[in-house]
Image (tube, rainbow, N blue to C red; front, side):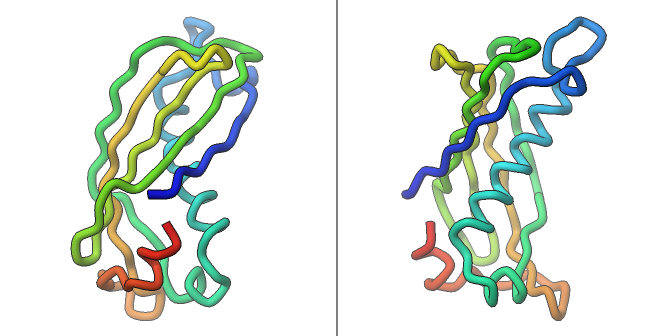
Length: 127
């Protein structure tokens, strides 16, 4: 399956009282990179017709990130079933040390009905 990557730089707003990246920020990054991957690959029509909601989320924290660290977010989908897909996000620092890894189950939603929608072959082929 296709991998999508992006980078960011840790800023002051990402830090907690211990001066490392707040755990909540990692979860936000997981959501942000999934959305960026979707928006890069899907057509305007598909984006208009569908959106994703998070059903379950597991994240394992391996190491800390700090102010001004360059962070690489890497994501890919490992499976599809009906209206759901499972996405992996790996978060690395600039030395390629794994900082966190998540596995999230997303549900495809029809934007008109707000109900789950079976993932079409057209969407599967994008990823």
